[in-house]
Image (cartoon, rainbow, N blue to C red; front, side, top):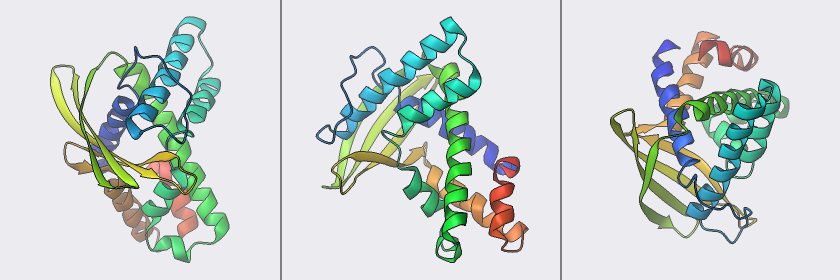
Length: 207
């Protein structure tokens, strides 16, 4: 799936920017009453604190990945995203297969993001506005300056039944990450003749 590498790189950069909107701000605890933008700022501080600790104390990679996963669990709806990526195959999959794909998808995204944060921590990010699609879905819009280039990013945040806001999609310069990963899943499913187990087993290798 070499065609997806560029998109994945963009996703990593995009998610990194999402979590880096207010690196210098104080980080309040993530709460259901916070706005999508406030949640982004809160998680940003947590993530960049982890980067500082890793750089100064040489945190082992596995421990660092686990810490990043803990921070992302507060803001990213991995079950929703992985189910959306599977598309129609989600209904065909067994509960065990759904859980297995969610795990491999999440592991890949966490590790990619954890590495990306180390590279893009000094980017300049500005909020370009927040669009309220409906009371339960907001899009946080950003403009990012990095290495002389400017990028536009849209982050879709959905309000859960619990009242918490969680990230469910990112669009980077017009490229929809949800659709990109869905395309990867469909291509893998075709490659392995509809064998969901093989798609799961080769997800990271084929990316």
